[in-house]
Length: 165
Image 1 (cartoon, rainbow, N blue to C red):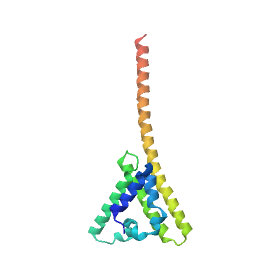
Image 2 (cartoon, helix red, strand yellow; image 1 turned 120 degrees about the vertical axis):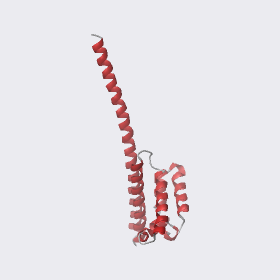
Image 3 (spheres, rainbow, N blue to C red; image 1 turned 90 degrees about the vertical axis):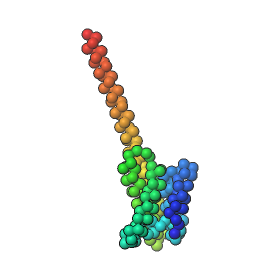
Image 4 (cartoon, helix red, strand yellow; image 1 turned 180 degrees about the horizontal axis):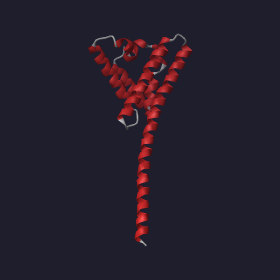
């Protein structure tokens, strides 16, 4: 198994390469080479189903690796509401892990490739949803500023009309 730090470093390089961001990270993780080399791949995907039955110490270590992975994903999400960012990172990681596990489990190579590609698209859609929320929040802030200006303008006009009589 690759170490968590080594896997995350490779994913971070892929995300940073040519400004690939979240898409680079997701595509690097859900590539056929990663699927085809489970002994060299992500320990989280390989061991997650068995971790719940392990000791508190082992589950604590697993949790730390998982949180580090979530932190890496969050680095490539738009800044904004931390709760929304955390929810998106958890959803993206869940899609990535499940996709990798399913793609490794099936015997049909065409289906396995379809699982990988659809998992990539699903993870990226989750990232775009957060982009949409960030844009909506920015639009709402601009809209609130515009409404304040309009209300102030109307008050100024009304005062001038009353005072000018």
